[in-house]
Image (cartoon, rainbow, N blue to C red; front, side, top):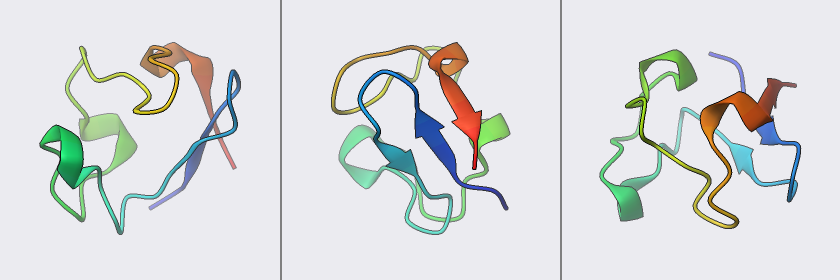
Length: 52
């Protein structure tokens, strides 16, 4: 699974870690994140992320 970086603030979404503080379990692929998920640091939407 690929990591994704927020183009706004540089936050890295790592599917191995997920985003447990926001209800995303470890092992959740970026593509499987809810449509309303936003960057936990700057609130950018998913379309502001790019694969790294």
